[in-house]
Each structure stands twice: as structure tokens, then as C-alpha cells.
Image (cartoon, rainbow, N blue to C red; front, side, top):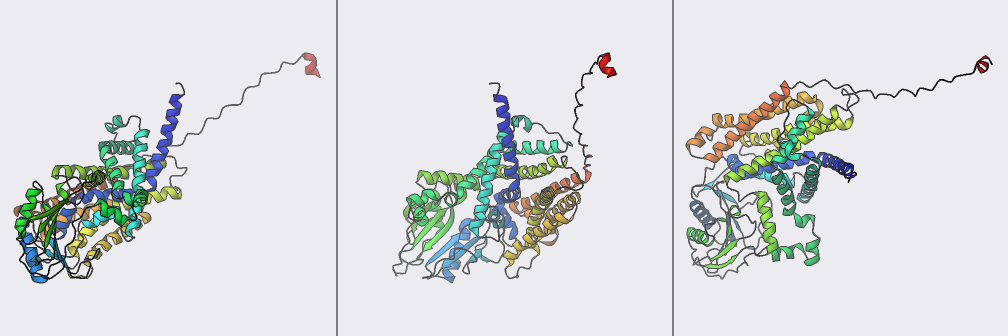
Length: 540
């Protein structure tokens, strides 16, 4: 038992090294993933803010009827119609159609798609990706093939999972450390903050990392599917039930009122709501209306469908997830995305995501603070130290500034600009590239102050710009009862204040003088005993 202490200490020390290096090697990508993932909990609200031409949706039936009327006038003989309905967090529907003999486009801009406003009329909002750009960025990355981006995100998520487990093992008094914070103590303060942020939302960090891997498990661990199915297509065909397509009869028939169908689906789903409408063979006696349930209605992410007769409005069939494995996977996906979460829980998810972002950031800064005192010449640090220090500035302070530039581009770019949505994203990454370069050419302290101050100005300036220049400022939104737009501006203002406080903290911080390295004490040579000589020997 006496040897158990040193062995345990050695194991804990080995986990400390594992924790440090797994966190550092992918820390900057993890910061991007965590930050954009946290922001994505407000994906719909950001998209709404990005399209100020469209107001809040009050009545979904009005929007659905307007979409059907548009499709009826535009493509009455199309093979199918599709309408994506807004919920209480979004505004405006998307209506499109598929022509006979032509498959629906999988990615990119659909030339047949139009936006239907809250009044049921065709709207012309500005071209933008809105909140989708942050949602996609946190697991697809950008400017790389989607599969590569997901592999990189999964690789980093696995490192994060290792860092979480090794971090728990490393901190013997982790819960005691949570209640301990010693400000103004340099490295000790960064460690206290890192520990507190890690423990504060530890269940969330473990859940969000593990479920993030589960969402793409078929990509990361494909051998189970390969061993049991001839292809991934066969796997998805069996695991995800879908309503079968119909063939038109060639006999014309009037369509049932879409409002009646929506009300019938709501009763069948015990208060659930439709998120997607697909009408096959419209204006035909064989027409079918398929309603897909809104993702925010249930925790389990999956395909919940009801098929109606397009003429009579009677329910023809109903499908929902039945496989226990798919229900378990769908539950994890739903938990990760948080679409089911009511407003209070959504705020908790968002704040926990910010805590995870800050945890990664403090870990990267702690690596610098811990090694600064050990440098042989602090005025001339080695290349690895300088690289980490500069990347910290351009990523931790620069990425939020670049994301704010995206929002500014949304307001400033001409609405008639070709490829406008892409240029909003280009502006964000051009700004981030410039800020990364700025972090390398400026002294670190000045780089932190300048980039944090820029981020604060960009974020806090957006609500002021909206108030003075647009018709959708915070006051107008409050008077109109449009809380989503008003809260978005207020949150931007609060975040701007937070970054301003961080910049001020760096300005006021007085770095302590580097401690002189103590010279190792050298033991004196052993004293030799004196030799007593005989008188005769001495004379000789």
C-alpha cells in the first residue's frame, strides 16, 4: 500500500501531460467549433436579424396558404411542391417546386425557390446565409470539401473527449478548485478560471462532445454498416422510414385546403406542428400531401410524417422512428442540436457553450502563462512559444471580431450584389486572415488590446447602426412586439461591453517581473581527515 501513493501520482502526472497536449494541438479549431456551436443555438434568430425585410410570423396557416397560392399560380402542373414553414423563432417560408423529369437540387441555390412573408405574399429579402453560416462552420468548416471538414471536426472532438477525461483525472480536488478563484495571481488565476469553467458545465461539455461524434458516427465508424448492408443507401433506406412517392392519375381534381390538413396533423401529433409540406402530383386525383413534423417538437431527431389524401384530406399513412437504435441515435442528435429546448433551456445551453469556449481559451492562455516563467530569456522566447502566443491573439480575440464583420457585411453590402451571401462569408474570413496577421506583427500585449477593442466596437456598434440607419432598431422592434430582433440587438450590445471590459482588463494588467531562476546549490567537497605524521616521518 505504501507504493500506491507514488504510482497514483505518476499516473496523474502522465494524464496531466496528455491533457495539456491534446488540448493544445487542436485548441484553436476547438475554439472555433465551440464558439460557433454556441452561437448556433440562436441560428433562427440570427437568420431573422439578417433579413430585416421580413417581420415576425403571427399565423403559420396564412403563410402556408400564401405559399400554396403562389405555387398554384406559378407551377400548377409541377411534379411536386415543397414548403418549409417557419416556427415562432423564424419568419418567412420557402416555397419551391420540382418539374417533371428533373430531380430536386441537393445543394446550392434553388432557382425555383421563393420566400413567402408573414402576410402570405412573396417577399424579397436580402441574399444571406444568416445563422446557417455559423451552424455549418462548427462542423463542416469552410472552403474545404464537406467530408474533410467533418473529419477534421470529428478528430478534434475526439481530442476534446480525451482532454475532458484526462482533465478530470488530473485534478484530484477538482470540485474544491471550482470554488477557488484567486485574481491577480498570474498563472494561478488562469488555472483557477480554467478549472472553474471546466467544472461549471462539465456534464454539458462531455455530452456535447460525445453526441457530436454520434451525429456523424456512420462517417467515423462505418464498419458496422459495411458488415450488415450492401451500401450506405441501403442502410438509410431501412433505418429511416419515408412515405412512398405516388404516380399521377392524369385526372384533374381540386386540392384540399392546406389549413385543414395542418389542423388535422396537429391533432394527430398531440399538439405537434408541421415543419415541412410536400405535395406530390398537385391538382391530380392521386395527389398526396406529406407533412413532416417540426424538429423542435420532439427530442428524438428523426422523420415523423403523416401522409394525407390531397383531395379529401384523409390520413393515408403515418410513419415515425421505430428502431430502438435509431431512436437512441436520434435522441443524441436532438440533445446535441438542442432544437427541442424551450427558451430557458436554450439560454442554459448557450451559456454552457460560452463556458466551453472560455475553457478552451483559458487553457491556451494558461499554456503561455505557465511556460513564460521558465523561459531562459523572456525577451527572446523560442519559436514554439511565439507561435502559440500569436495564434492565441488572432484566434481568441480575432475570430469573434471576424464574426462581427459578417454581421456588418450583412448590413452594408448592396442588396443587388451578385453572390451577396458568399461575399458576406468572404468578408468574415478576409477579416480573420487580417487579424491573424495582425497578431503576428504586433507585440502580444498591444495585439490583445487592439483586437479586443475592435471586437467590442464592432459588436456594440451594430445595435447603434440599426437604431440610427435602419427601420428595425431595438426601439422599433420593442414597440412592434418583435422580441427576437430586439433581444438580438441587446445581446450584441452586452457582448460588446464584455469585450470592452476584457480589453480594459488587459490595459490595467501589470505583468509581474520575471522571477529570477535560483541557482542550484552545489554541495561542498567532503572534508578530508588530517593525516598525523610521526616526527621521523616529518623530518624525512
